[in-house]
Length: 379
Figure 1 (cartoon, rainbow, N blue to C red):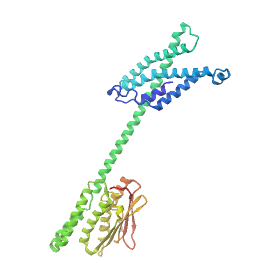
Figure 2: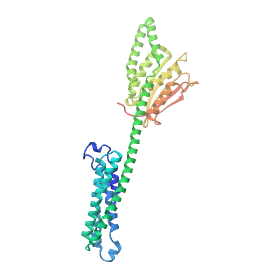
Figure 3: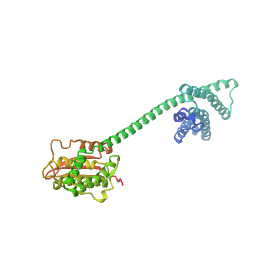
Figure 4: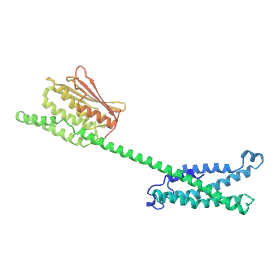
């Protein structure tokens, strides 16, 4: 009768219970376990009482109810006498395997006689006809054996459940550790991807600054100012995992200003980002990669250059950013470069299938890259 309850309770015993004496003696006791014991006590009390229908026919309903109540209270008392010490020993006793089993076995041996004596005393109190003296030892032994068997069975169930619970907890901890490691690796991978800024841009810009200072000092100073502004924004982004659309717009504006000085009339650009969208969160350097890709593969190869337009809009719960150029359009390597592959990898790591990068033909010429992200306020 008692094994379900103390099985549930013993399973909750902490491995380090002995390290904090009496702090977790009844660890795990809750309303669910108490409800289980009450239900089992009711069933056991009914099984020991006379038939309900027969009691009704004989007009002994009151006596039947008294008997059920008495058996119920007796059962609860016996359960507490046996179950509470077992739970306390399971929580506070030795945790090493063989020592734990010896301690639990001794607890069962010592509590079973007390439970048997309580049951025997209840029978002697309730039933008017006393038993012959020569039957006392036999009845005591029978009660002792019955309760010892119940306690042993319950303890075995409790220990099995305890080991299963610990195994599940260990699996959960291992899964949590794995997810934490995956997150750390993902963050490290993102930082590596973010650090892959086109090195030729920096070298070419510095070379242009040196050349312009020899031929047009004003334009050289302007290019150097925009380059400094670009680096002021770009370098911190390489160490950050978060940014806002406003910060990325500042970055690409500086980049495009440098490119416009270098390319001259071959480059025209427009940035259309509403003020209400600028606080939204975007991955660092991602928009810059799309702009770089449009300049490098779309506009720069054409002698006449072209135009570039960056536009942001909201589509339900998504932030959509279009980078459209009037360059040479799709070619053999369109969509397969390292920069675009890095963007797709980062999107998958950060947002799964919610975010995406799509390439489409721009009319009348060029390519439109569309970035779709969850619209999350990053301010």
